[in-house]
Image (cartoon, rainbow, N blue to C red; front, side, top):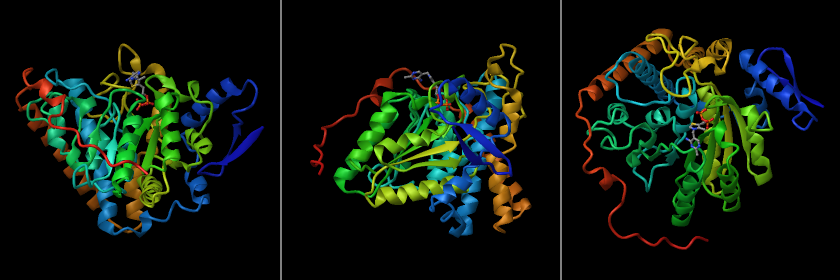
Length: 410
Ligand SMILES: Cc1ncc(C[n+]2csc(CCOP(=O)(O)OP(=O)(O)O)c2C)c(N)n1
């Protein structure tokens, strides 16, 4: 059995049906082959056929479109600066998972959200162990975040959290989470509270392909569907969880298919194209605000650096390749990384906006140069900050005061 999937070019890929006997090995080599071929599997065509995608972003005012591009390049230069620092500065104290390659997802999703007003008004984002892109897109201050990542006293969370515990309730960034799986359970708890209060907020949970095989993923979708919660699961499928290809833990090619048993929309979107991501997110946000319940969005993407840290990083060069003497980068072919970099989210956003007549190349370059400068200054400022002290750390763990009983739901 085989399904035909139209690619962005003219080629037609034959996709082995997941239910075929003994198809597993074939499927794995197909998935790797497709990625190595430049990840040209078209997501746009399929999404357009569903009738909703492709409607919103082209109608946005120019400044909103330029803002999306600005967010992408701010994240990109934050990640590049941080990776270069980790690779070359022995005094750098951070321990980071880099988001480069995936910028269009955080940028597109957060552009569809309300990012101000604190926890009672802003839409809420629950993030992952790879949180910096989500944080920047949600509006977290880059300097304070850079300081937090180096455990500085003036950091976003007093230096006691570090990368995997970043949070800024003021902009609705409820935070990073180092655990793979439980995040969406907490996020749906927030969505239930929002529904009980009758507020119009929505909750977005970002998660990787590595979350698919956890019980939390399925329990969350079930409960969110059952209770029609204002909840959006944005699954960033960058093909690998840590060093293992997702076909080792998921029997489907599209993880979005997991939405079907719960009777909710499962949308596959090109995670390299911020405007497609925005369209899918906006559609899901509108649905959630109307009280119609959750959506699962699977954004196909790729990360340019190693799972964490700087193996394979050459300062000044984007991406991690096989330069690492320990060869930690060897879990994926270098040509696969380079093929995905041909569909770079920065280039796609810039070329689309030039094509739409929103700005010209000179303006795009100016915006990118300012983003690079902002990132350099953020890390310089962070490096000069005092380290946090051990005393006082527990004051950040427990809340004070009395719990307020919530109104009964339903
Ligand atoms: C409960 C739990 N088990 C294992 C780990 C170790 N771990 C850290 S990241 C990761 C893989 C995450 O993969 P994915 O969700 O696809 O995100 P990606 O790193 O690709 O962005 C694992 C297994 C963890 N953090 N939490």
